[in-house]
Image 1 (tube, rainbow, N blue to C red):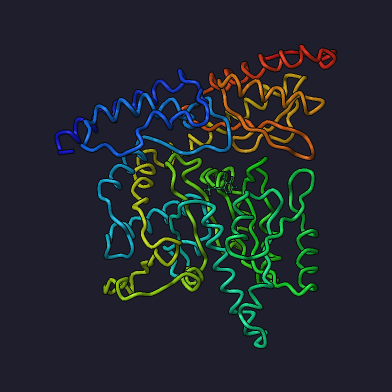
Image 2: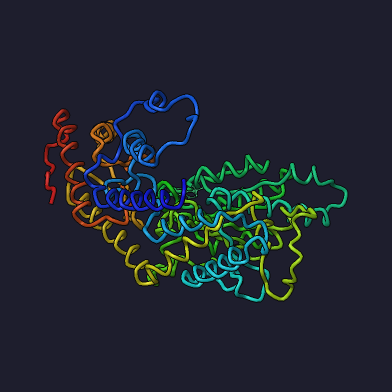
Length: 491
Ligand code: PLP
């Protein structure tokens, strides 16, 4: 493809994308295809000679788009938001065009330096403790990772290496393998699946502590587990606390958990994958209580902060802990640049892969394009819309919410037997007009309604509610006893 063709394809692609965004509501949020739909539509071999870009765009439209779930649609209320915005898309485009691999500073100085700057911008905007930031004079700093899962795993590796060194000093009679096999980590039973996976990948037993009926981790449960495990010969080393759990968006008490971690020399990692973005709002500052105990803090701008996947922001109190666990030197990795007084990180020692993408660009474009006010408006809009949905549910006596609206999430169900909500969910999913996922809480089958799209407005919330009510009417008409005495007010 030559430059002229690139321009033509590029303009056509941008037009396509803009039109896609503008017409998102006209599409069914879930695709109407069967598993394997694509296989016979794509040849079994690479074409012998190059094809015209028009063919590519045509096939994208005809083959790929029918198999797309529209994550950016205002009808998408599943999981958590996955960010996307025009400036982020352009940032990604530039990153692809530059095609750099930031293995060290000299590999593209702007790649490392912009990332340092962006992580400081973000950390300050969120009021994170100064010592987590590169801008402090200490060993702390921020880095962009692929995902929250990777961040949890990397910090587990750092905690593991650090604990082995510490315990070796206390127990010189034990070798490293013996210590390693006796390390134990904790989180709550509400933690994301990636936390358990981190334990598997890092070969550390991960204990998921039982939470109370509101999904809260209790001080006594944590303390008792640590004490029992100590007595059984284990060495507690790592705790993952959550700000905004995946199921019902509860948060652990960082001050209580943190002080216990400090007492027992355990690494505290805070997984704020989704809800961390709300820290840009002054009204959510109280969530920071106890965050000073954190050895590491992670949230995903690629969830709620309008930057497209992947962009996961991780800060550590002492970056040497990551490097001590991960650094592997080779002569070809030396960049022979004098950086002693610059506080510039060797990011390859803070991550799994050697190469790294220029992800700071899309973050830079997004943060500048929206500004603090624009980003705050976006988060507030979602929270207000979730509150509106919560009110709509509460005003219909056939339904119940199972917890307060938290951030952009509302968890609710039809009153009575689980089967009614299960039937409701099945009906909604088969219609494909809105997309929600289910969860369970204390044995109750619940639906999670999340405000996800940056395009969402009040009319979208009312549309979703009407859709839910129309299907609830059908479910309940088959079970009339439920209707007795209940209003069907849909507002
Ligand atoms: N932690 C929490 C609390 C989450 O909700 C999620 C995903 O929704 C994750 C971690 C995993 O995020 P990622 O896909 O970036 O690994």
